[in-house]
Length: 132
Image (cartoon, rainbow, N blue to C red; front, top):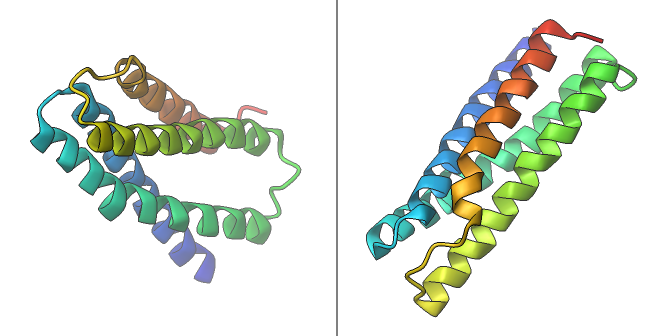
């Protein structure tokens, strides 16, 4: 029963993290300061706290289910690291843009949304299908 509660919290945190990451990616593409502020709020209020919960509950679930040696989990972790690193890069870039007052969005923001969506889709397939 505890496993299912942790799994539910993990899934809710994943959804919140992805929502925040998508908001950051879209908000960073626009030059308007209000959109960039919204993207920063999505980072601080949604994506960052959710990512912390994801990184706490995910390993707990893997330990409880004894999945550490499962190849699908190792593949999933690669994509989890990709979106985690992307979050850090987006967050730092948004802070820098706000500090410098730059109007031109970096190319990173054009690539962030497809990278996020493809990575999340692959994570979902690996978790549900467990192809190997």
